[in-house]
Length: 464
Ligand code: ADQ
Image (cartoon, rainbow, N blue to C red; front, side):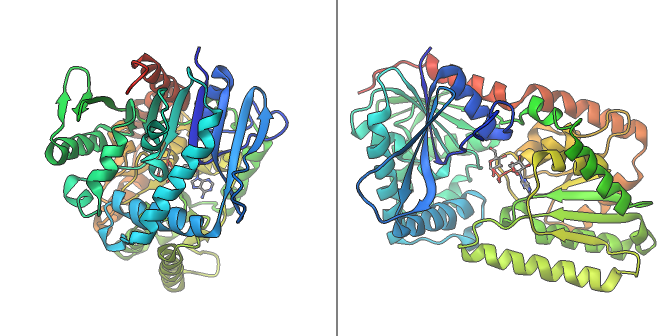
């Protein structure tokens, strides 16, 4: 079996002791795939330093090598905060209004991708499978090929691929996508993002798509482009159920929301997650159903992210203001309708909170997949499951059509969905839960890793 080399912006270093099973989600799955294949996980350490000697920090753990490099302050500013998070992230989430096009940050992005290639190349052996992750590293495969690497190289995009009409607003879009043709396999979360990518390749690059094999044929190259919907680490998440931490978390929430239905939202504080729109929807529900204000408590867990980027500071202010307005108008001595918690929690605690909440509200304006939706379903009590309200614009909606699907831009739609969820009879809750749980269990992150690496291993090696 070939070794695996995973390359992503950040790496998740396993906890030193008892790492197996201690870590969930994508990080846990990639670490277990790495353990199985043996191999390396390479990325940025998260640290800034001006040292350009090309030092790589190496750490070995259970047959897996974690290799990281530091970046300079300028690199972080231009590549990470700049091009990746102020250009590609908003553009790929359909937010042209927030997208910044700066020549300097584009150059910084190319420079850091070149630096990644330069540093990781000596660590790669001829038979290794190389798996590059996400929008930070779109041109990395091309940079590795330019250095003569003939290995099989795959790429997975965790976020949406935007429609061609939006994507062409990116200066040098053609150059960027042509670099992606250096990969052997390109994976997307859903059929919709895959179709947008194929549309771009055929319309803008004149590529041919072979329907039978799923290959994009362009400039003498053949690339397999396919949807691989990501899932949760089912076993790890289920293992949380019997932990004291999960039970205590559920108990805390239940005892503080007695006689009321707890509705929960858990998100990174990011404008793609539709948080202000969600609060507007909840406000509309209270306006339209004043007699039910006492029936519902909404808990929003949203730790800050990417605080160095201006649009992220803005979203935090907007959210605090909207929450404050509703609480100001609707609170009673014994009731605060919205609890906004500005911090993260462990997976065990989240499990407990999800289980104790009879409604899960997941309403991104646009999302590659959204694992919170799947975690919410996974944490439900089968005999008395809660209701998932899910944005039709999340990748997860394609996999979970039995959720209550909503348009997150419409406060009326959200308000209506909350009312339906509050009043949904047990029989219907069970029917919807049973339809969703099989997908959440079977399309788990281990199967996702397996499907991708199997396809990558199946492609022909040695390209020119
Ligand atoms: P994110 O946008 O970060 O990731 P999402 O799928 O919503 O992704 O959540 C990822 C993980 O973070 C989940 O396991 C969740 O429990 C955890 N998390 C989120 N908010 C949290 C909070 N407040 N406290 C604690 N934990 C929290 C990107 C894409 C997604 C895609 C993932 C995986 O944007 O569309 O699903 O990658 O491919």
